[in-house]
View 1: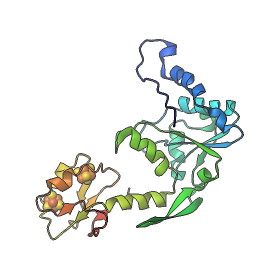
View 2 (view 1 turned 90 degrees about the vertical axis):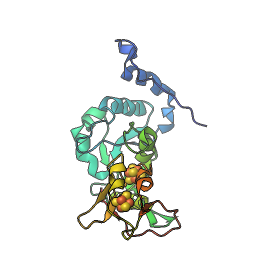
View 3 (view 1 turned 90 degrees about the horizontal axis):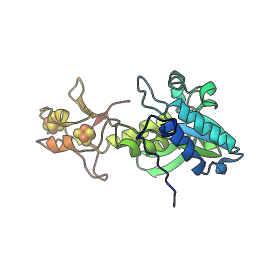
View 4 (view 1 turned 45 degrees about the horizontal axis):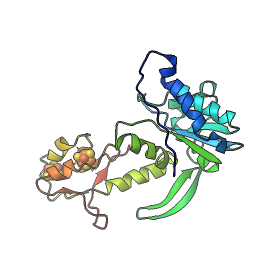
Length: 248
Ligand code: SF4
Ligand code: SF4
């Protein structure tokens, strides 16, 4: 059974003690950070990318890092290997957050531990080596506006965030296999394209339908709007029929 502590984001008054950092400081002592004593702790977060900036402010990261150190732990900040530049751009530097910023899979995302799986189409999962090496992990997740919002983002920060980019791509490709598209039945009416709330459905120059699985919420608007059943979501045991997928 886990204890869940919650601090409201509502700032009731213009008062230092009502601010989010002050609330966070009051919450941290309840988090049993003593469990990290003498351990190398991977502080896993997503540092953002491109022009995205809704990530956790470096001040909060620094507070966590300092609290782990005060409890006797040895934290380092980590995210995907190719996110290091984005980390610096947002202020996640050793000087600011009081911890080294380490690519989870090494400098080139080539450091990983391979774990075999029995998932069809996913023979192995490559766990990022620096995370596998750590004695413990503390995950900082921010609410997301895509997918299944905050919870999806929090889970994804671990499930997709602690594996190599090759495994991320393989998992996304698995998601694409939820769809089947039959070019023989498709009339190219594009109702699926217009019905998609996230602009995830596209036709390429050859008229082949593709789903950007990263944007997809599995709302099934596209399949429901298809008048010819050319686009469907078959059960897993049914055959995948020639759907292309877009790299992300
Ligand atoms: S399931 Fe929903 S989000 Fe996904 S492609 Fe279809 S309409 Fe778009
Ligand atoms: S709604 Fe169906 S028939 Fe129309 S373009 Fe999409 S897949 Fe093709």
